Image 1: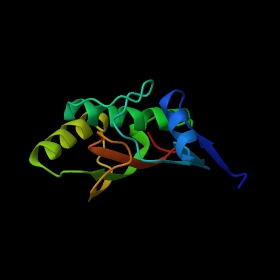
Image 2 (image 1 turned 90 degrees about the vertical axis):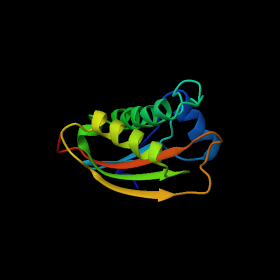
Image 3 (image 1 turned 120 degrees about the vertical axis):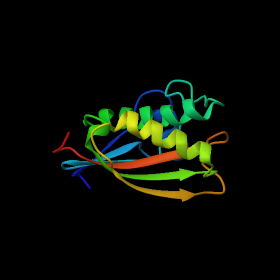
Length: 136
């Protein structure tokens, strides 16, 4: 598997990866795929109780994971898998507003899946993506 390069961002990304034995992102040639990113503070691991802050931080963590693996960020994302606890009207409003902020020039593919629970207590959303490094 020497053609695969694995990455985890410093702080909580490395700690969580070591604790659960996984990487935050993998680079495969001109593509990066990210593990599910929650809305945790990348230094402390704390999760805001404000849904809008949590979702925005999850998007920021995706960008951090992509950049750690050598990508530019959300401009290169073509596919999103979103996992959520509660697909309420509030969640969808926050999701749409946040997606428009982070992806102002394109609309990536989206698969949204409800979950009974997520990996870290307090999380309401987890986002994994695939990015094409030849774009953006």
